Length: 400
Image (cartoon, rainbow, N blue to C red; front, side):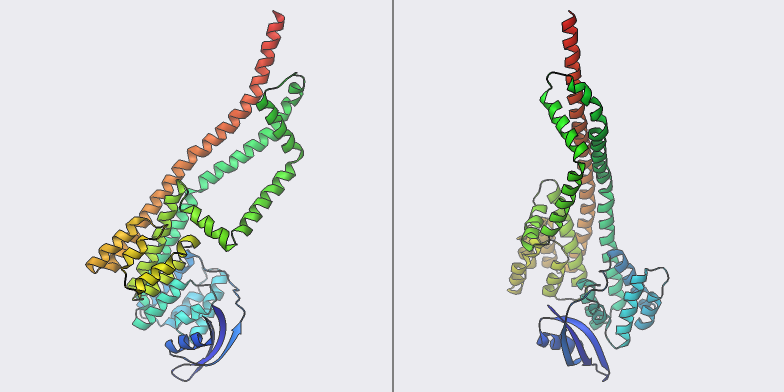
């Protein structure tokens, strides 16, 4: 999509300016017409994002405040003014909310104002507010969004917290190995130099020690180079596609990733569908929140099948990367006419399963990392003790 700066006239005849994404000028004209505006001018502009996208915690708090204030009868403009002047929020958030308020004061709906922020607000929030404005349910939709992003933030925090201990252990391994090879093993080099022959493990260990002691900078450069190459490679669509495919098929971690992706999709689809957004539009928006190129690439076929009249449960069952429970639950909802409640139920269930899967992953990682550390330390001890023990045996044999 391209980025357009437009001028338009609202129903009251007031002039408004803004920025909106559209495929072309005709698409822009249709979008503005659907919002109740008549476009008078449009200019293609380069997309700029002066601010980073808001995180789930900030989005949840914003939606909750809007829902609470609007639900209490406070006008939207006043509610946004209260939120934007809150001293507890970050300076960047205050600037963002103030800009949204400025757009709303120009006569724009909240959804359009958020859309003009060029990616600061997610499509999910923009589209749900658009549906809420049409249905007059801004307060209830805001509270749904608050719960949605609260659960997303909670899951992200749990994953981050659960992986902290394995990261610490991995860091300890690097530190211990660096100390052993850089400072401890060199103390034995003079002793080993006096021996006629050394076991292969000891020779390998001494070679590693020499490399670490004399060429440590190569390791740092190599680590930085690998990190940079990895980051650059993942920006290549084809590489990212196959990497995302690997995520859902790798042993142990694959089932966890499938559960997380399915939970994320189900929660978004549930929120969109219960807000009155059409199932096709909901599928398109929910697809973009999965954050896995491999799974997202399969949705064109799903959307085409649903448009052709195929049940959504049947179409989603063919997605490689989702747990099968999703399609089965949606099928029950379609048969009973309670698709919205079933989507909400499966989303809650999958959120819980994602938490449990994360804990299982950590339970698996901790002993694996400890075993790796034990193997490294054991190899070093073996490499040191064996030649010394052999030397003592040789001395004892000579004495006899």
